[in-house]
Length: 331
Ligand SMILES: NC(=O)c1ccc[n+]([C@@H]2O[C@H](COP(=O)([O-])OP(=O)(O)OC[C@H]3O[C@@H](n4cnc5c(N)ncnc54)[C@H](OP(=O)(O)O)[C@@H]3O)[C@@H](O)[C@H]2O)c1
Image (cartoon, rainbow, N blue to C red; front, side, top):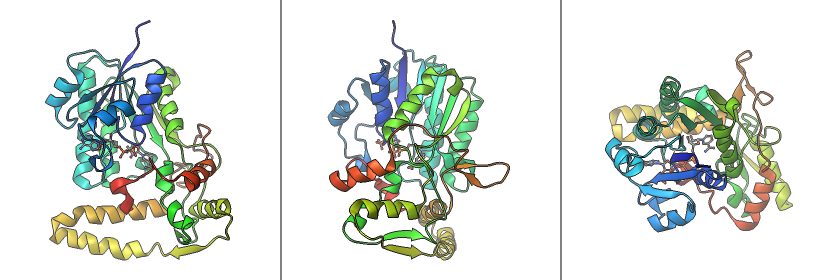
């Protein structure tokens, strides 16, 4: 049987790498399109990447440039499916439009030209309440994808483990767990990289995951920052120690940075990062119930078997390798 050809952009990211490996394991003929130097801080060489994405053919070029994408990526060949795990590495205003919108749009156009009939997009659950520029850029692309004539699958995950692992090292070293308000302002159902990769690969095979928006979280009940902190202390065998921060601090920082950004446009991204910080400290990564207008854990589907508890246990023993946030770490 001829293997289905899949073209993956964003193949070098936290989720992208797992998606490539999952597709290869399922027998797809995978081409990964990447930059010569990739990863956080451009730390991965072409050779290292080939070994990380073994089983897929790695092609190098610039996804932001249509000519490069067609010449170095598609190379006049046929692909059946395009999968995008692209996102801006910093969440800045211009970079979000460049990557989450334009580069992803380029991948759609290139895929169409290559004969692809299906586009699987890794998006984010938070676009359901768009207050940030990267969310608007993602939504614009989602809209154009739905109008493209291709079969589409829009996967909107809740939180990744890396996004709630930032305090493991400091808590382990004896510092308190820092949270906003009483630690119950938000909740999420975190999902692991392998579980999400399996879910995304299922989109290629299951017709009921096509032409659908697919919000998805990990297994178990929704968990608040307070519960995340309690879990960490319990695993360490220590009494919990919390530091509570007022969420109102953002209402001072954001207007000051927004005003400064008007005077000094170079500060535009700093103001956006403060808005992103507030968003994640005040909005849950769960499905918004349209009837109540509230976040609803029961309406948020779960998938997979990797639990946050096992993840915390592992990183407390083995460290956080592979869970770095890179430029996202400022929020
Ligand atoms: N963090 C969370 O908790 C969370 C929750 C739900 C949804 N999401 C969404 O999940 C998606 C994937 O996230 P992730 O953490 O896997 O992303 P990531 O690790 O930051 O990876 C981003 C990918 O995009 C590529 N990219 C970025 N800028 C580029 C540029 N200028 N030119 C070419 N390629 C570029 C990167 O390539 P390089 O390696 O070359 O930089 C990398 O392959 C995003 O849409 C994100 O919004 C995240």
